[in-house]
Image 1 (cartoon, rainbow, N blue to C red):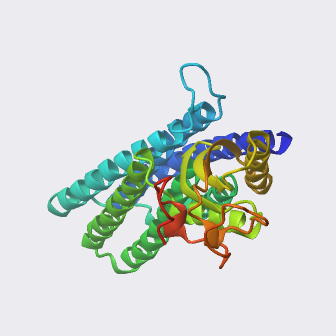
Image 2 (image 1 turned 135 degrees about the vertical axis):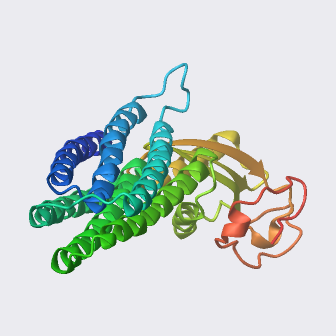
Length: 335
């Protein structure tokens, strides 16, 4: 439990650092724009407004998601992270559209660009800072399974790449004096920002709709398979939903039909312990015990079973399609 509390604090601390650094980067880019009047730098500054807004929104969302469950929120408040990531996606899309509009308008109403050398230096430094905090955000987000930190880090990472491209374009502009290049750079990066926002929004909507994470489910399935006891004839109907730092898991465990209730309960506890010992997240585990209905004989290792209809042939190994499949209690397993 201590390790989980440390992980939760680390998530919050990481997002707090990201929010503060994003504010500093935004101030730097805004200064660069006022010095240069470059629409290319304006695109970078506009995207940074999104970074600042989402940084503090995500900070609040992480704070909310780490609150314990209560009577009004029996599954906790972890979905606040998904909601903040969705807001981030919307804001990025809006920023991309505004950038493209401003860039096209500047083609028809050009403005003289000044002190471009200073602007290039500021944008380059901002790009380096963005890369550092994006790398750290993704690293901590993956370690703590925080979609808010991962999606925020990916957004900052795309901002870094756009800053690199912007610096290259501004250097060419500085050397050639082609002012139309400023608007072209802005349009290109406006499109990149727009696409980034759409991708983030698509991913977070899937999470809000509780789309099954088959990669994560497969991790659980293989873990169970590698620690499977002879008494566990079959495990299926496995469902997993993630709310913040909590996994809510439902599954069915098939045991021999004559297993006493107290033994069945103990088998369920052992299965739960296997899962909780290998994952740092909190796990809420709901297990349904099924008897074999004498239909699993060829997959059951139970010795001296007087009701056996068939000889033991093989144990049911992990298959994700079977693992997540609902099965009838009175028919043979569908393989």
